[in-house]
Image (cartoon, rainbow over all chains, first blue to last red; front, side, top):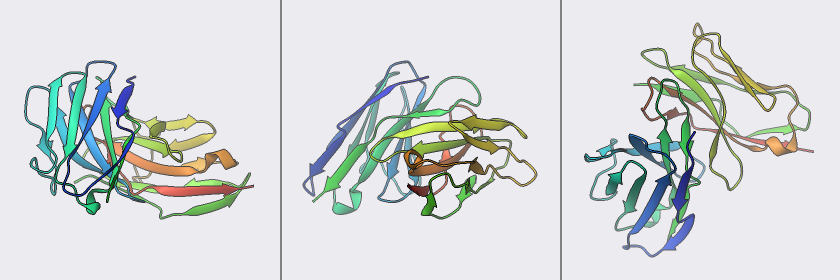
Length: 115
Length: 112
């Protein structure tokens, strides 16, 4: 299993500013995943963060808007840049432990409101 | 690409009623299937999973059977409680160390 500590748990930010979300895992994992969950919606994958290389972004998400760092095997950050009210969402980090058919573990999420 | 379709909510049931939340999937290979639950104000938790055809996952009175012939993984519970009120997500994964693909989620409200 894996325990993920994600912070901040929530924030209210002014438009045009940036927020960095941190995720710390209690074990070493190869890949970390960042999701967005808009109000009342499902989870949408933003990017996959692999230690030692640039993150891989899904269609509709770009590095300039959502820069990701992955300095080691237990930590990652996601920055939401130049925020607008449309960025108001819950942001979640996730990992899967080694082995086939393992489940994904999630942080508690960061509830972001942009005003 | 892979996708998951689950029944639209919200679903409102009386306590002790029978619950079914339908989930079907599209995948190129033989995925693992999962149900996650998100209680109000909390993160996602794994509810149950199944990794091959005819496997039955179960937990907390919930069950789901991996049906390859119908590409389905319907969630059932014989008698729901108020504490089961949450959003339920069906998800799949084709291989380890890849992100899960989620359905849209189904909000369940159980009233006393």
